[in-house]
Image (cartoon, rainbow, N blue to C red):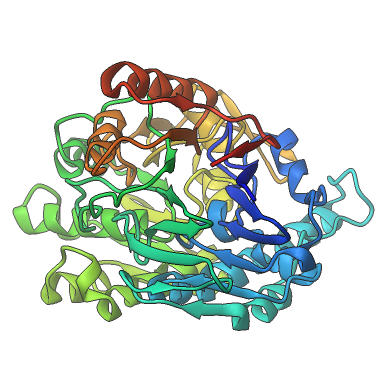
Length: 454
């Protein structure tokens, strides 16, 4: 019997990653992500999967970012009862991210109902914090490099992908076929994370393509960030930095701290980390010392280089402070959470700054800001944007096109087939062409919902 893959997300977009592997009557889902960005994509979160959740026998998570794990509470709520296999780092982060995701959805629904800007009456969250907590016992941790059987007769092995804590690539072996899922690959020159491991031999490869059409600048994030924040400090403004609570927040905290130590930024410049999720994640770096480049001293400095904001009252109190100051707050594409309140409060003043730190998926508020939007819609109203909007080009935690090709070149031999996934169409197709032309390997970009053999 053949082995095939159904592409249920993460195709034509960088969100909603879900890859259903089927062999006979057995099915396994690699990643279980939320769709984000355009409304058309977000509506897919409420469309039932083409397979009943109780017919999925196991889930493998490459890492904890919500575009790879955030659908899991709904999958469990609708009947999935199998194991969710992941690394220890991924489990630790899911314990933070998933309940927070449910809480934010509840808050957003409540806010929409209170202010009457939802088209639905009442607005309902996709899932609740309790739904997320209920799914956490399904997580089962596996050490990197250890081969295990997620389904009897199926073999799987996690290897480090260097993207965030716990991030991994997955080699799945079933019915004599070796299928490699890259997950999100980090950069070999990342500021805080270790390099991805070399790719193991595989017959079929699914390669991410977030930056499949781009090359990262040669300057590092500190060289790029220094003059930007110097400019802000001189004019006494407030920098609002939407960050991913996992990875990006810690990289920016480390960079700002190092710039202060070098004397490039005033040590008196206040920095606030306004995201309980990011605060908790920052402490996790002390528990996973082998997965990142930071020394013990640098890791301790992460938790002392900023004022950690936990309560909503503390968050609201920031609005009464005057600049210069820096506020880092989730989410990274300004799709929800406390950062929206900060953008709404500070975007109107030309002395302030909105500093975006990586890829902004089309349809997100971050994308609107990057493209020079004069206003952005927040909580049902248009917020005028007079603040300086800057996008860092060097802060991405994703490998760029040459780095993705370099990772593929570590394969011991050419695979039979490469599927280019987890990218906008332009990025995915550009990487497909480079794989075809530069490596001479067969690559294609699958359509959403399509099924292909391995």
